[in-house]
Image (tube, rainbow, N blue to C red):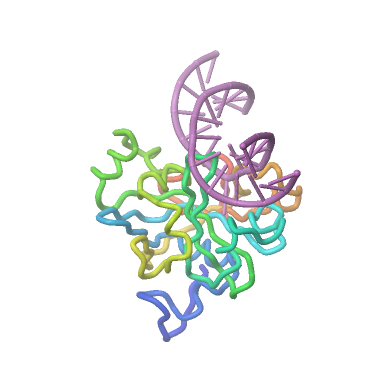
Length: 205
DNA sequence: ACAAGGATCCTCT
DNA sequence: GAGGATCCTTGTT
């Protein structure tokens, strides 16, 4: 499952070149990893891959100031403001100059539940963090995290326990994309957890 | 200056 | 499952 058996380490816990791999590989391998911000820790349960020459990728229409981080070096954050409200957390992948990323969509709380609930209007249960906007809110993600290192920034990710099985499906909310991209099964979720969204559109590998 | 986008969320049936 | 709310940032004029 996207495991990389390399001995040299590029950041705490991740093998050298881990984030330089294809977004599809990184998206799947990040399931089970732990995201931390302040005292809050969550376990990633759902991701999506956005690739070069992918009409759903923000970089598809060319480089701008907004999406510049996508073209930068891997292992850095690209935090995107969606609908003027939601802060969506992405990890830049692939070699520098190759615009690809992994969107982190859902997670399960591990630590700091009280803080997460306060940010999430006191809500609780499986819908607490099962969407990219909800996740950004629960973690207190900021646009300023864009360009920061994903392994040693204020917001950072560490390897965790990989799920026993992975579910796949088409990506969410990209109806504007070309049909072959819209239907590509580039969404990944941990099996056997309630902490994911749009479960009906997922299937076993 | 301004228009418009926009990888969502929530509240209904 | 569908529809509307929502509002900041960017890109363009």
